[in-house]
Length: 129
Image (cartoon, rainbow, N blue to C red):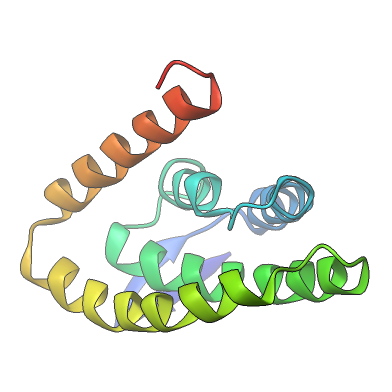
């Protein structure tokens, strides 16, 4: 399928995108992370999209997954209101500021920062860091 974004055409395999997005949504809802560490590589590597398309698209997809997962965890009693109240304003502010910063630096730098964050996350999950 050809996807047009601001006058640029990209050939995207929708089956890979939908299947990968579905699997990422299941795993991220089960383990409590937003899905970005997996959605971004899916969209850049498997779908071949550039970072300026991937970042916003990934966040929008993750928003709905996070909303649904949060509602279900709230229904099961796995929800901490104090943590939510503390993190919500910071998340809103970060979501407002980060795109402005990303727009001013090169896509390669954005990728390198993302890789560094993923490596730190992986080391933490493996118990190394």
